[in-house]
Image 1 (cartoon, one colour):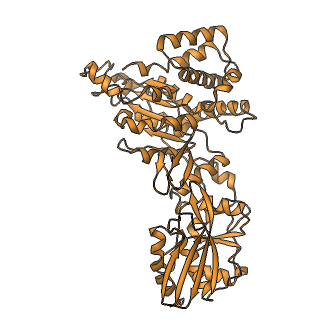
Image 2 (image 1 turned 90 degrees about the vertical axis):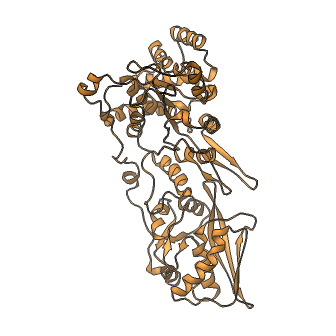
Image 3 (image 1 turned 120 degrees about the horizontal axis):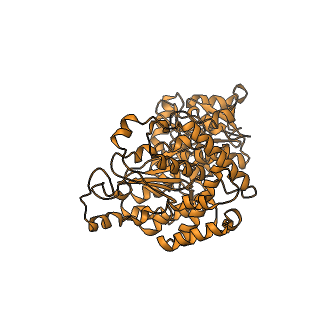
Length: 510
């Protein structure tokens, strides 16, 4: 007999409906899988065979042909184990086939018949809901993630026997529900490091607050032990919580990357990704034969922290230029091209020279001018142009270390950041794609960043003296807009522009 079961395959951060057709007929016993399956799907033949026997089902000793449609779409992963198992049982008349056309099945099977969680459940659930699928049948560990999608019945099962029992007696099962979404999803956890651990560094703390309020890129430059990494790791604690729509975006990406297995439903906290400086270009931007999101996409709506920036390879850093400007990255392969969102705040730290003490007031630098020039050559002009806030972090004096009190807590700073972002969102009404000042386009500058004569003369003088590009001058205006929002001012003033200009000087120190 012939049976058809519905499943899905991930393409980028979206899903495509896949039909699993199973034909059990006469002939020599064996299983053939068609439709461009990858190695994991080919291995499912042995997994499914052992699973059916161990779960006390009869495995048909006949010829079994499994066709995955559409045939020209490459499929991957173990999520087809469950639909293949159900298809074989339906084709051999061991389970009712009445509901197969209404539900979508996905899950990996263990040899004892239990179901293991799989990646990409949220985008699959969203696609199923749009296509009019009645519900999902999947591992219980993935059920909360899928239940986020409204209008879709989600049935989480522990093993293959429960799936068969559901198909034979659906009236005995109730779909899973996710209650109290707003409270569950929009409340940030409290595990972030607190700014009150940082002593002194008022200038760097101010830059961190501006970066959080406007979503601006930031780099700290200073000698070892000055607190650059400590400051950067406290940025997530002063960022506002994710909105529900943003949580959905972030969760889709993390789901596709396989980071949500056994972790419940939506991502509540803004991501903070910190790849090692040995990372390759594809690991940052994404890639693979079946393209998967990289670090910049996993940091979407959050923070990408690059510690020891000058230790990264120059060609790897150049991969960041287009995503920093556009907010997305396109991965092109022979068979397909996928686009991953990548709107993140870049935070970096580095020493000012190879020995680390150039410009330090306590320890003398031992590097030659040529060594410093080669050291900074890894950071190209176009990349530095895209970093809005360039901050020198000096080491604390001994008396500051022992006597200075702790700084302001992250919670108080976050309140000011939230107020500034609320002012920006109110100003952006009618522009659905804008969430912070860093995303302002050039066409918006004349409308929201108008300059008076004093501010204009100040900016023109800075452009001439520092040799700034048009992109850098635009970013100064965006930073000035954020500074004005923090101050509660509707119009840009000369002091806002002056403060923004002082954050554009480190790229000239090499």
